[in-house]
Amino acid sequence: MLDETPSEIYLALGPTDMRKSINTLSILVEQAMALNPFSGDLFVFSNRARTILKILYWQTNGFCLWQKRLEKDRFQWPKTPKEILRIDHQQLRWLLSGLDFQSAHKALRYSIAA
Image (cartoon, rainbow, N blue to C red):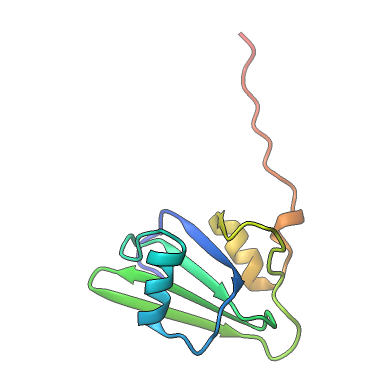
């Protein structure tokens, strides 16, 4: 999907009208999410039924819009009062595969005792 790894991945958590295309989604990123649509970051949107995801991103000289529509089942879209959620690349892969990334085991980080 991408030549370069994006620095951040953001989910727009409320339902989004999937009739919206690149221009309107980029305005949503800038105005509603208060983020820069030209950053190269991925911005992920879902419809109310959670059967369609759209991913908007800027690549070198233009916007790209990627869509996945499920014929059966629903995406495990987060239910949280937040409007925006930042996720990592592994969580995006899990989301696109139909897994609930929020209940996955968190990575443990240990430091060496001095």
